[in-house]
Structure formats: C-alpha cells, structure tokens
View 1 (cartoon, rainbow, N blue to C red):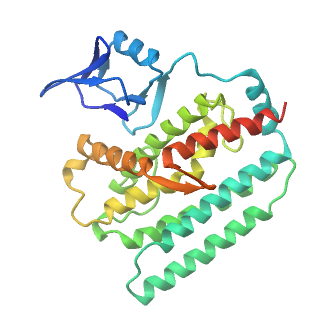
View 2: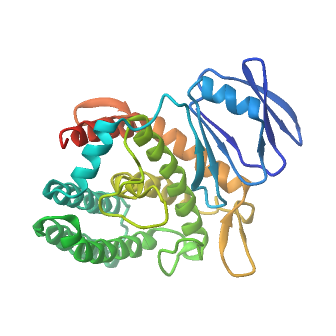
View 3: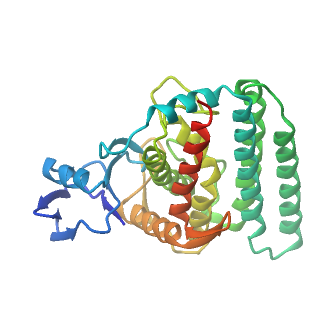
Length: 327
C-alpha cells in the first residue's frame, strides 16, 4: 500500500510503531504493516522520527514534484547496487546485446500501442479506417526498429528516436478519436501539460517512474546508468528505458477515465497563467487510486501469475541477473 501525503499543510509523524497523519480534518493513525512506500508532495511535511520508522521497516520515501514525478528518495541501507551488478551494467551498455535489448523494448512498446488502439470500441467506418491505417503505420515503424543493426546503441539511437516518436504521435492521434470532444488535445505535451489529458498522463507516468526506480534499486541496479536514454543531468535514465515496457498501463487507466463522459470536472485540475494544466488534489487522488488498483490486479505474464506491480519487480530482478553475466 502507498501512503500518499500530498495535500498542502498535511504532516506525517510517528507514534510508537504507527504513522500519524495530521490534516485539516483531524488526525489518523496508520499501522506500519502493509505500507510499501510513502509519497510526499509539495506543501506536506514528514518528521525525522517518521523517516526513521520507514527506514527501519524498509519502506521507501519518495518526494514528488507537482507533476507527480519523484525528485528525491530515502530508502533503507539494505538496498543498493552491489559491485558485480553495477560493473556488469556498465559493460552491458557498451555491448551489442544492449542494441538487441533496447530494440526489443521499443518494439514491445509499439505492440502495446497497437493493442490499446485495437481495444477501442469503433462505431463507424471512418473511424475504423483511421484505426486500421494507424495500426499499419505503427507496424511499419516496428518493423524498421527490429531491422536496425549496430555495434553499440549510439549507432542506432537517432533512427530509433525518430521512429519511436513518429509511432507515438500516430498512437496518441488515434486515441484522441475516442475521448469526448472537449477533452481532445492537439499533441502530446510534457512539463508542463497544455491540456487536461496530458496532465493526467504526466502525473500517471510520474507515479510509475517511482515504482520502476524503486524496483531497480531493490534489485541492486543503478538507475542512473541508462542504455538508450542518457544525459548529463544526474537523472535516473535507466528508468526512462524500462518504463517504455509499462507506459501502456498508465495509458489504459487514463484513457479509461477520460472516455467516461462528464467524469472529469473543473475540480480535478487547474490552469495556470501560462496556460499549463496541473492536477489538483481530487485529480491526483483519482489517478493514484485507479493506478494502484490496476497495478494490484493479478495477471499472467511469462507464465507467472502475479500482480502487475510484482511483475515490474520480477523484471528488475531478471535484468540484474542479466547484468551480472557481463562481468
């Protein structure tokens, strides 16, 4: 269970072996058992005693920005990259196998995009024609990705970025056909969002970033050593690689919400003076609750029945084992 503290003025403290949440409506005691993470938004507070209680019980603490993306993390010192995994991870990034891995990741992302489009309810011939066209165009880009060859990832990175971007543009343009007219958006926008749907997507992706980063850390992987996504700004770029496998889960939840006409009200979001859209407390709560419920569902993947969240952890563990073979 995630303990979410993101309402301005709310504080989290400790009373013996329980957390205590203090907010404008009163005080609530929360037992430690069952809590897997604590997420603190801007304007909320946590005491050092509560931090220590979390560390003692191996509960990770994430500090989130307004978009829901983690900007800081506290975790138990029992976590952390061991040298064999980290050294192997560095060797892997420069290997030809890293080329195959990232191609598989991006191709799988495109397959997920096709699957979500095909799951939409089509009611007219024109829309069916547009859906069929989108599926074929994404398939063309997927075929191009799988046919790429190079000795290291940098050899294929420019083409991969271009084709991934084009496939995603087609994907979102097509999903746009299935949401209410008043919520349709011009294009995918990030940091900040320029419409309410993108505000939901950005917050959902930020939530998922935190889950994936935590899974990588617990598996002993360094999230700051990326394969495809690389930069010089001290960002957990491997998270940006791995999340491509799971973005579809956020997309499914968000588009399921926004396709329900009249469910999205003005209370869910605010529009700033620069035209940017941000989720308010009610919108954040709906996204978090919906995603948590979805991630807790047990599904069959790779012959194993586990919750979606557990499948992320299993993938991270398998990735750590792969990296160890490159010592």
